Image (cartoon, rainbow, N blue to C red; front, side, top):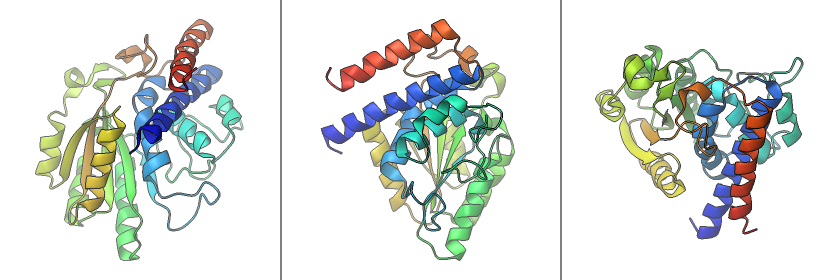
Length: 281
């Protein structure tokens, strides 16, 4: 990609992070840590990779995205809002009574959401079903699923990984947000899923590892995913939980806690400064 394209993605990712902070602060609840670690992945998917049309959120031939780690809905909502699926100001209604932006994605209420998720481990199974459907219907669409490294401590993802290989779902790309933290602490201390790449390869997947904050590496990885035939593809993305907000970075305590007023001001000041820097102001 060009330098200008990369700078545009960096600006958008910063705005997505601002949306995460705005939404969780307004809700006084939510999950900022994992939303921030995945903000660059959300940005690349929605502004570079996915074949979608915000004016036709139910377009039958669109690519599908499943947020298997559904608690990081604030990050998904911010990306969808920036992409034009619904108004940016609606992010401030997160988790409010009557809002279509609830704590976990709802495919029946939220434009751009392809699957209702929240119960960890289940999203990748739904993504497998979508990919198999596309194969049966001879559609060229692709299916993407984002999982957490703590989420894959569940048994169901591994059944889905086995299923995907058995049915040769080469139109499926799983992304593991490997930020190494979950609500109870460090993933390797709670119940280690490591080494993730080797385990996925043992299940018959093609796998690559990237820095989940590097857009050039994402571009190469997603290109490799599209070119891989006969087997499903996985991207293990090394990220930093809370990325972009200094006091949230690599802190398990920010897994599911909203910023208070002072923390909100500090976080937004950092992100506004970063955005101004990217805009050359």
